[in-house]
Length: 245
Image (cartoon, rainbow, N blue to C red; front, top):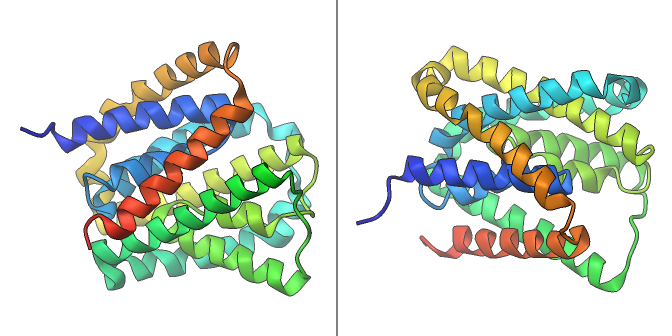
C-alpha cells in the first residue's frame, strides 16, 4: 500500500527547506517537483506558495538593507508581476498533465544547464536588453504557473546582477511579493482556504528544515551537494515528462 501523498509532501517540504538552508536556493522548486510526482500541481500550489511566503517574508525583513530597489522596481517586478498573472490564468487552460510536462521540461533544461556550466567551469554572460526583458517576463509566467520563476529569472539576470548579497536580498523580495500576490489570487478563487489546514500543519517543517540545514551545512561540501541537487532535479524533471505519458 502506497503512503498518503500528503504525508509524502511533508517529507518533500522538509527536504526542500533543508536544501534551501544549505545551498540558498530551490525550496519551492524542489518541493513542487517532488510533490508533482504524487499530487496534481494545482493542488500543491495553494499549500506551497503561502509556506514560501512565510519563509521569504521573514528573510526579507532580515536582509532589507541589502535590497536593490532600482533593480526590483525598475526591471524585475513590473515584468514578473504581469507574467505571474498571465501564468495564473494559463493554469486552468493547460490542465494538470500539461503543467506537469512543462514543469518537467523546465527542470531538465535548468538542471542540465547548471551541471554543464559547473563541469566546464563557465561563467554567466549578459543578454541583450530586449532578451533580458523577455526572459524576466517569461520567468513571471512560470512563476504564475508553478511559483517557480527562479530558474528563468537567474538566467535572465546573468552577467548584470548586482553583488551576490544584494541580488539574494532582491530575489527574496521578488518571491515574497509574487507569492503574496499568488496567495491573494488563491484566496479569491477559494483554493487557499480549502488548503489552509494542511498549510498550517506543514509550518513546523520549515523551522525543522532550517535547523537541520544549518547543522549539515558545517560539514557538507556545498559544491558537491549542489551537483547532487541539480542531478536530482534533472531526473525528477524527466520522470515528470515521461513517467505518466
